[in-house]
Length: 357
Image (cartoon, rainbow, N blue to C red; front, side):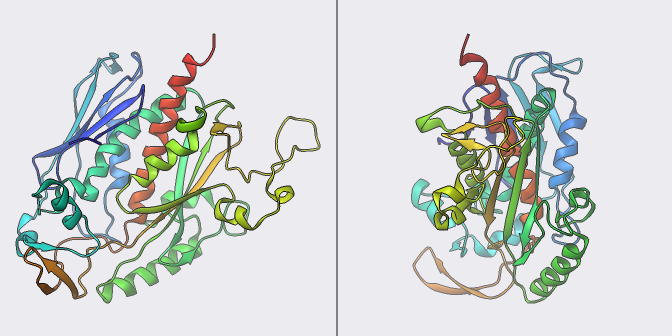
């Protein structure tokens, strides 16, 4: 199977199935001498765990570092991190063994490989994202050494839009204070009411995640086929539930004039731009402005509401999906978006050392 490895210099391979013995990652290309502990990884994995408000699973997700770290510092050799699966309820999926669940990858996976692990979706499960988050924790440590930070939040959840930076009500400190990771106290109350109502109906919700990367210098990225925004887009859209992405002004730029969309310089002569419609990237290379993008995530496909589905023989069945599923995966996906962004930026940061003498 291909497609399990990501990155050029900072290279990450993930492994494991949803209900297998363990899931994890191998990171190759991390420079030696980086201070790294289990606590660094566990902190990020804890942010990804489901909360009582939008999920019912109890995943401890305790990481183990098997290689690549000695006396608290990376060795320059491959870093192997695993998380043992200890809270699977495979019985919940036995009734769906021969049925292709709507909105899932059951049909397409079996069409490609001829068989699949029906327990929780196997490799296509959202549980695979813990591997990305573990690797992202290491990438974030590298970025921090260079003053670069990555922060994401739920900017729209269950159709309820949240205030943007600079607007009334936006509070960056509020993001990690509430289970929905929205930047507004009022937004938290509205999101909670909407998602609870959907859960009662056996339904689910999607949303939009905004990600902001700060502290970058100009010059990260490669022209043509390996542009910084192209790589970020590939990384973020590779997250299972992501269905779209836009940078800066995004699709709104299609309705602008050139004079409106172009980012012109400030009048104070400080070498900065007055706007950031480009989202911090021009020609696939960072401008030194903040990188900002938004990614759309679909509703959780596993819902209690009765649905029609095909079985292996082409018969249409009425099904009701049981198990412990999130009514909305957006708050957990916030952490995954941060991780994938950090992986791309760490990779390009290392690649930038090879750009010029």
